[in-house]
Length: 362
Image 1: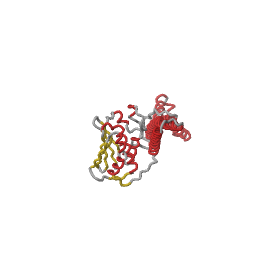
Image 2 (image 1 turned 30 degrees about the horizontal axis):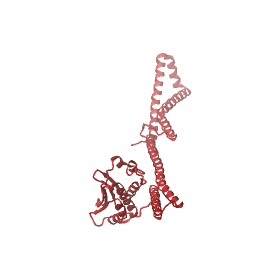
Image 3 (image 1 turned 45 degrees about the horizontal axis):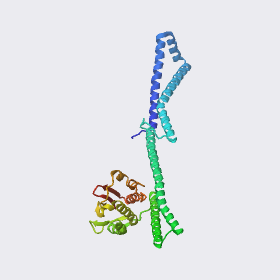
Image 4 (image 1 turned 30 degrees about the vertical axis):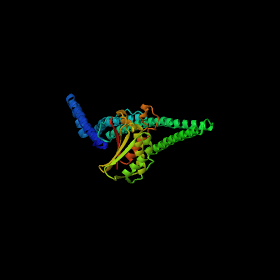
């Protein structure tokens, strides 16, 4: 908004008050003289003679006119300034309301000077505070959900570990095979517990900005191959196979190989978890606009539109609808954050035929 100085407004008001006061004073003077001349010509003649011959009377008369002029000018100036002072009071009152927690204010922009700018700034400040308060409420909600979900995810395997260790401690097993089974289950649940703790720790570090990128030249083809090979046992357990294809033998970007591997692990793990019925995971790698584009395609169940919109939200888990209790709901949120740190993005499309996670980074 193009603005003028409030000093100029005050000067204009002062100038208007002078001109108005001069006009009113002169009209009053001429009016009184005219009335005197019409109603009492003798008194009018005496006044004129006295004014012309008596210097003391003339000075007193001029002083009285000047006092009247100053009084009228002051009244007009104060009246003109009421608009500014009332606006200041209105802004001050609104700021006090904000200070007391009332964010439902909107100061009208009544002028184009500093006061108008101040009112506009206060309105923008209120909107910013409301946005921050809403964000804080969302964070509080996420924090409570985090505590609830993580507490459950930690308690479930921990309960199993304690239960089986108690059986072992009390020697409540009938054979060495049964003992080994108890140990294997305890070990598996302990690993689940460690995985949940590690993911929570990683999520906290990323959210707090404690992770710094250690960028280097990363060959995406090789990194994808290395990460995918690590999932071979899981592929076999779920009767799945993977297929990797690339437009070029070596596509590289500048990135943090450890964090990018974490992204690909989360996406592949998610694809196996929800797409095992499709039997295949296809990974297609190519260059798009000087960036690497990696598509992870599985042919399992379709992800509903409602879930697609929330899939990258912290702690959101599709298994809430399918009554599964695996995962913390942080994996894809972590993946998206890491890719955004690489100035990239993750896109997802799902239909009855396939579900595609597309990672773009470079």
